Structure formats: C-alpha cells, structure tokens
Length: 282
Image (cartoon, rainbow, N blue to C red; front, side):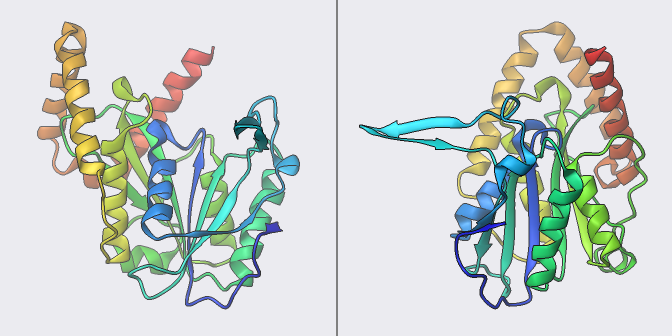
C-alpha cells in the first residue's frame, strides 16, 4: 500500500468495496461507491501500487492537464476514509479497478489493511446483467457466507457456482478471516446495460441504506433514474421486438411472487448472463 496519510485510530470501522470491470454492469457498483465518497466527504487514505496488479495495455494510464501542467494518472485501487457519516462509525471505501494479475496478493493487501484497523464488516457491491424489465423496481440480492450475518440481516448464503470476479475473491477472503461480510448485487436489464445505469445505482444505494439502517442521501439520482427509464422507454417504443420482449419480462415478473427478494432467481439470471457472455466471446 502507498499511504497518503497515517492511518488514524478508527471508530468500529466497516469496509465497502466496489470495482470497475467484470463485476460492474452498468457502472452500478462503482457509481454507488463514488456516490458514497461524495456524500460522506471521504478523503484518500492509501492506494495500491499499480505496477504490481495492472496490465497497462488493458487499463491504460490517462494523460490530462490544464495549461502547461500535464500529468499521468495511473489505473489503481484507492482506499478512502469517511468519518463524516451518520453511522457513528468510520467507513473505509475501496474504489478500484478489477486487477489484471496477482489477485491473491491484491486481496491479501486489502485484508491486511482491514485487520490493521480492525474492520468489523466487509460489504462488497456488484452489478450484473439479467433478464429483468427496466419498468419495474431493480432487483437487488444480498448474500453472505457468514452465519451470524445471515441471521442478522435475514439473507442467505450464495449458491452461485461458476467464474468469479474480484468481488467473490474478496468475499471469500473475508469468510476465511472470519470477518462478517455481505455481498450486494443489482440486476441491470441486459437490453439496456450500457453505462451508466442510474436506476440500478439508486436501487443498490437504497438497499445499502436498509442494511446500514441509515439515510445516505440520493442527490440527483432519482432524476437521473427517471430520465434513464424514459430513454429506455423511447428505445422500446421504436423497436417492436424490444417492446414485445420488455412486455414478456413484465408479465413474468408480475406473475412471480416477489422475484426481487429471491437470491436464487438472481443467481439464475447471473448464470444465464455468463452463458450469453461466453457465447458472444466464442
């Protein structure tokens, strides 16, 4: 870790992490994390050494500058500290890009930081493409590999089997270290999965408020969500096949009892998404 400031003594801290890339359909998770950083006035605490974990031909550094002052910003993972929260506890916010290599070392660094400041819970955020209609509430599923967390938050263990992203690896590391953990995933309509997806971000943020039993503040997210939904409405209206497909999804969701509460349903959608992804790559 490259430390920007000395790590202070923290108040019963929790860690919330989100990563751009494979785990972040519609930029749902990364946008939620960025929203938390802004709402809680979080300050940079430390960052990963980018040369250890990133392939710069995959995630290229960015050149920027004003006037004659130019600089290069390297892709990395930063950890922010939020002390101005309504939780009466501090929050470490991990904002990163899924690493290109050395996932075990990367995860060990994050878990070492969590142990150093005595993090009492780790929450990971994700977004996945699924067969859900944009006109209905965005389903958010929460799972945990920790029995106490399952009981406390009334959630189930994940039953997903298949390829994993860094979110799954970090959740497993938390389980191994016996740190209570939650994994929160928003389902983004796959036919409208282009970034960003503010309705999914709002749904994930709202679910996070429920889990933390607090109000975070939504700023202009509701307006963005309505504008996004209106834009997808126009897309569907201009294409009979899309409109028919959306209608079939609406009927399926309306006739299924509380599909948004079913972790199994979202897991099945995730598996279908992965199969579609594999077919496209082939």
